[in-house]
Image 1 (cartoon, helix red, strand yellow):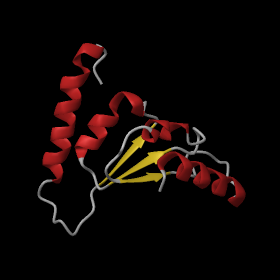
Image 2: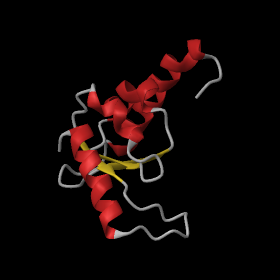
Image 3: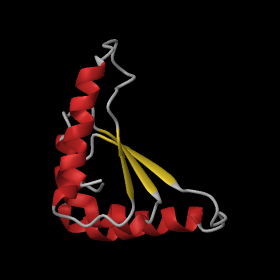
Length: 111
């Protein structure tokens, strides 16, 4: 993202367009996924939707699902895959903790 907020919209429009162009030759029988880590989604949720990826996977385990807050008041048109296990940590979460995260995700995105 550009440092100047006044340049964000132009950049986001360009980035969304570039993503759509890069996926435009893919057969309709294939799913397009995008993955995002540690993003302030509230600032860019519209641009993420404009990418038109079939599925967005999000690194949400460390944030205790707080990153999904942006999706509570935004009708994201496609599928959302929140992460419940962070492979970059030596911590292996307990099954009960992962169930807790899944339940939080369902409450936030309603799916």
